[in-house]
Image (cartoon, rainbow, N blue to C red; front, side, top):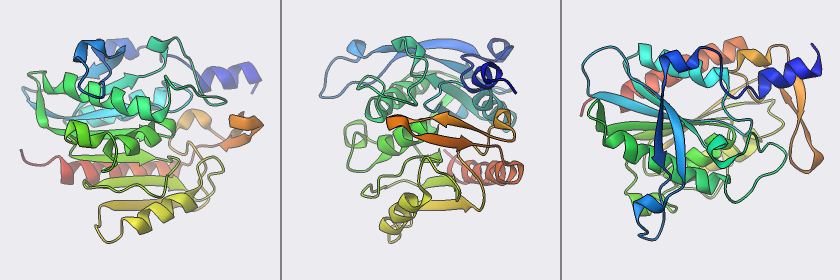
Length: 271
C-alpha cells in the first residue's frame, strides 16, 4: 500500500456517509474556576440516538491523536444498536488541528480534552432524549488519557461532581498515580510500543484495594488493535522522533467488543 493511501486511512477527517447517521452538534468545552460556561471553547461532535422513545443512556467517545477515524463511528453504530445514544467529540478540528501524534499543545492536551468531555456531558444532560444520570465516557489512546484524566478522583472531577457513571480507555498512556472512585475499564495490547502496558499494570495495582479499575491486556496485540483500517500494520511517527507500530487484531477487537458490551450493560443499567 502506498504511503498516501496509508495516511488517508489513518488520518481521515470524516468517514464517507457518517453524516447521514450522525447529527453534527455544537457545544462548549467546560471551564475551570467558576468562569461563565459561555466562555468555554466552542467545539462540536457527532450525535446519534438509537431507535425508540428514550430517554437513553449515553456514551461520549473521545478520539486519539490522529483525530476522528472510521473506527469511532463503527463503535458508535454498535452502541446505537445496543440502545445507547452516542456523542463522538471532535477536539481537534474546531481548534484548527488535524492530529497531534508528533507534538501536542496546551490547547489539545489531555487535560484540556478532559474539559471537552465535561462540556459534552453538560450538553447531553440537557437533551430530552438522554438520561442525564446514565452517561459513560470512552476514549482511545490520546482520548483514553483524557478520559482517565476526566475521572481521576484528584483531578477536574472534583469541580464537576464526576457526573459519569463509569469510564473506559483503549490503549491509553497510564499515569500510575491516578485514583478512581467510579468503575474504570482499560483495554491494551501486550505488544503496544506506544503506550506501555506496564504503566497500566502499575495503575491497576494502585487501585486494587478499591476495586475500581479492571485491566485487560491482549497478548501479541499492538496499538490500535480495534481499528480494522490498520490491517496488517504499519509504522507511524510519534513524539521525539519515535516510530510506533499500529496493527489490527481481530480476536482482540472482538473480545474488547464483548467486554465493553458487558461493561455498559452493568454500569448503565437502572436509573
